Image 1 (cartoon, one colour):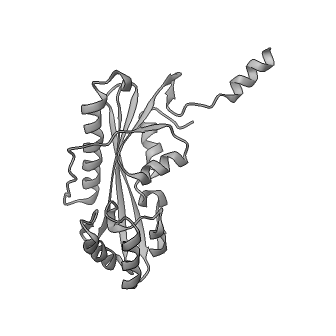
Image 2: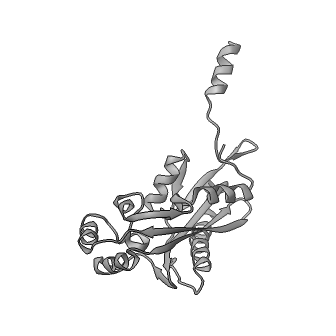
Image 3: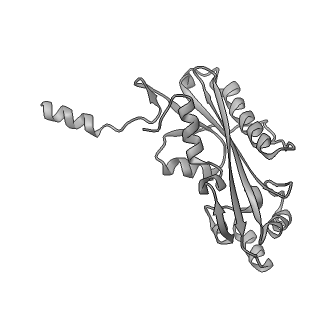
Length: 219
């Protein structure tokens, strides 16, 4: 009997959002399928609540921009959904914002395929920065922590026909810079310096570091 109890204990998986044996819930304040995919790949249990009425702003400094936007998204979900719902009294809300930045110009989500073509032609053969801001809020205390991650990406020289073909079969309108590193867009890339997952919108190490600032670890 004692052996069975020991086996049951060993079979229990640790809760990555437990502190002093109190369960926590992770709330992803984002509609990005790429962030969802990354969180699933590291076996996190989470729920998605999309922020609304949070238009993205572009400030003079790109790091200030992503921090502001990620904070706005996280705080919207916290203020309008979490704070008044007893089911989310013990939760961590995570908001993100990712931009592509080159030579003082922002390349956000293209408005149409024509703009997507322009973006990719401008990025062709050059280095650009992908910058992600992230904000985490402890719903029990209201404490918020923010940070950012920057990755330098060099594109190959892209032929116009390749760009046009890519735009036709890839959904580029929901992606900063009009490309997806977790999809076919990987073929555009010649070199990366920094966090690969940051280019997909969720810098894993920075995310884990900010969890630590709130007193949590994954395992």
